Length: 190
Image (cartoon, rainbow, N blue to C red; front, side, top):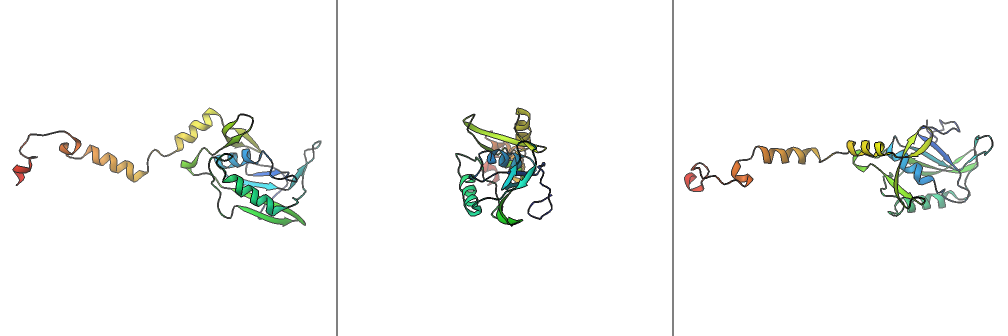
């Protein structure tokens, strides 16, 4: 389901989050950015309104979509707010839907070596990783972080295999072990 494609319902899901943005970028946008990056990716739609009593979502629009786009790009590249910028160049769009200005941020799934993607948490005063569970963002547990670390490649495949070959199958004299055999002596070969 993609908001940009017009194939959506006003309902949050594993890959779709709606946020109000009348007064600028919402503070909790970074939790969702981290959560989407550390799970399956997804779309953050700025310009929604959720009725506090019923929980029903509706589109409300944003007053200045271009300013929100600029603010997002500035903040996502700020290492004091976001540990790792994984956004693609075309990942933020200002669109008009039902006559309202809306901003859609498409957060890609982080590659194995880029996880966990952490963002600054004002309450904890440190960088924190988030994950997406259903329609909500949850602080990554120790188990989540362990799985992300486990999934990270140790070394690039070529380097790892060439290191193994060079130490396992190299002649003993090249590994720092002196040999007094006439076969390995340069004079014996001369």
